[in-house]
Image (cartoon, rainbow over all chains, first blue to last red; front, top):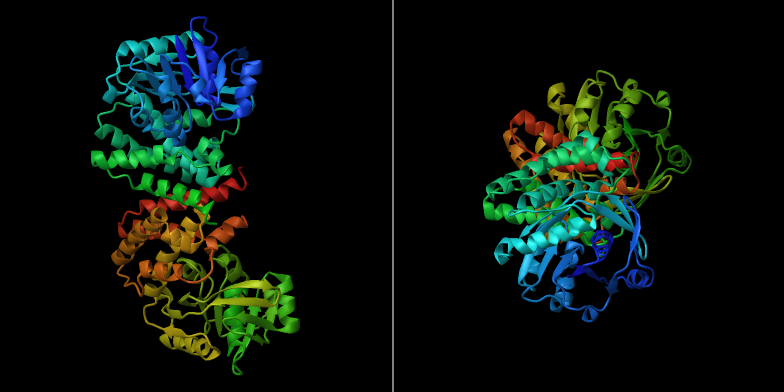
Length: 306
Length: 306
């Protein structure tokens, strides 16, 4: 089986390295970060932290050099989904399925414009690139995958991918309806990320400081109402997710805060922006998510209009 | 007539310098900024910009050295009101009236804990301290004053103060109900200030960028609803104020953005916090003002909990 990891940054590297340990899987990684790709090809991809091993796999910056694959795992920032899948679409054919393990919602819709079968995915494991070829594996956790409804992806393909990732060492659950897991994480992310990005507070501080902790809950209530109106049964309670994450050791900066500190475009369109759009379709008002979306867009705008 | 300017920063200096030009007014200024006080006593207080002159007046860092005064004008940041009026309360007696020309609402309530007669005031002129003893007079504009309702300040005292400030060169209107002017500026400030502070956008950029410009209006709608429920007739349309200010030349940073860049405690409690509190009393929901208040409090919190 051939699997192409599209976007081999922190999260993509976790999938790529684990899958590359399997003798029956050939892993190809596509990434634009040349030094990382070169290091992987020369010395292998090393994970440290929650697991520590080095895996051999093929990495490329030129997608034309990647052979046809049975599965794809898209792990770019949501802002880069279209660019990445349009560059790698030729790698997949009518028998392939491509799974998003990205933040937010809306990535599967983009991927489905380029490939036949899409798998909806949500992943909890997190990491960070330490240096080219070396990725810190910070947080272990499950991954949930299911058919992306509009493409009618056969459940057998979903199970095959889940089974491979699980055998590689990352527990992955195949489910008929993967929206509940995705929306749980979406609602969690759409509160903790913009509040962290706008205040500079790390996750624990923002959760336990009463004004921002309450704002988390108020934002989540809007997202929960939208999910309910869409008929999505949440897999986890986003409020408990926030409390649990706040008790983790260390001062974890939300990924959107990391983006803001680096003046990188954030994923807010795929988080709060998506909740606002789905809220409109479902007839649920989402003024707080819209306000936070507006502020983060304004912050991004300030980098070019100081 | 003796007038004590309590807090002789940018705005206080505008009032102090103009009043000091009158032969029948003796101006005393209280401030904690020693170099500024020394420069004023040694070389006079100079304004440049919208007007250019130097005025002689008495400035003190020690409030015990200030004689009894007929009027007070409090011009500190709202966050310093209690400290400043408690330090200077002995300067005023039962025949004195003390006027706030500060941002937000809630300052008069604090001042009334220390003096008998309080005057509600709102001022548009703006400036900045260029160096000790020298203040840039950036924006001209009117000042509105009226009795602070709970202290039943005689209208005659209000008129006497307004007349003196106007003769000094800053047009000041005495009105029976000064709440409309104050709430117009409050609602304007409570949208433009926190959005500027959280995004880093200067006023024009935030107004003309669609997401933040719309957020201005959404925040204003809540404040307008609270004012209406309180029976306050707005003197100006905050939306027109924002549009007009956005067309002014230069890239004006809202005072709250200046505070944030200097990591100074902001006036958000007297702006969005006050709208939320008055909303509760009036039975009007203000979720956006509460969210912006929470974010600014979180931002302040991050300076000590990074």
